[in-house]
Length: 513
Image (cartoon, rainbow, N blue to C red; front, side):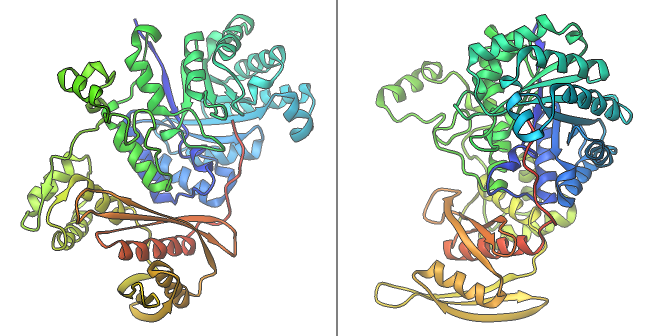
């Protein structure tokens, strides 16, 4: 018999705490829906007390997403817990996740509390959460650097107060696999009521050991792992969901464990999170990286052609990676178009279908063949876009080796066309200067990246920019897709400005396990 490992995904909470990442409500809900398709057991949707925007995102996710438990993070304070319950109360399976630090480093320098006060706060917080619901998780922040005997007392108190899951984080990624295995194993020996709760782990990747530490904890008896898509998160990130799941699958002979994850949804989920957060996946990233199943060595190529298992321990199809086989063109009809979208996993309403179909037809006039990657890009840009205060009406560029790059831009706002021209160090710089003249918005370009979404001379290009609002110092990600890279550049910058305009109030509160 294999034991069930619960997958607790914190992409929307800890993952969004990655520097420079800021997701709006629609994007968070879209990721949450994809996480349910993936089959995660628990979605940590956010930290409701952090900001009105975070509260709204958790509340909408809880109300709209079905198929997974939805958790909200809260410090071990009554106000935080009340706010968390208000946010998740409409969930199909709500969970409150409350935490307090237990290491002497945190007690002395951050909380300024005694150990006894932390024990009292733990009991009070869990009991307060249990007034609202039965599914309560307690986390001992910085557990690995805590005195083990004291940690055992805290865990015992949390379970006695009603916690159904107790989480043991390696908050700063300090542990090594053997140490962490023994650390978790000792809990099972020392905490008398440990059998009344699911033991969870939450490992950070500061030393590159988050996945291996999580797997070591599973071998020691842990039954829940907290992780993120692509391993994103604060500092060096968290344990990567896709790596943990596929390690358990590929080495089920060793771990004797299984998850409810539908592995064929892994690659799509990875790409969606990368696109919406603006965090590119390194080519050699395990499981989902561009090179994860690539073979350049002649010896390797020969071996794979003769027998895939010579150099591949995982079939790419298992995680939803396959060659593009869907090709549509300008003569394709609405029925074939809808059927293709369904096969790609998109369930769109009639109005959304019409909008995406018009965008598809427009692109097909400029691009000979439309592949599934093109379609994904169209759908994600059209369906997930925020309301447009500014929209690109036209773009003219004059550039070359002997002329000063000049851009003439037309933007639509409130059904009026606004025009400006500007010179720059290059065509993109000229475009952005012209846009700045029109919008008058105080912002600074932080980063600019181009990615070819498809192959060929008419490849669909995606530009991702990060823009800092000079008024709030917050960073926003903008994306633009077009066969014309200059048009994509303009769309990306305009998208970032629209995001700043429509940004939620307040910021994110750092912290948590």
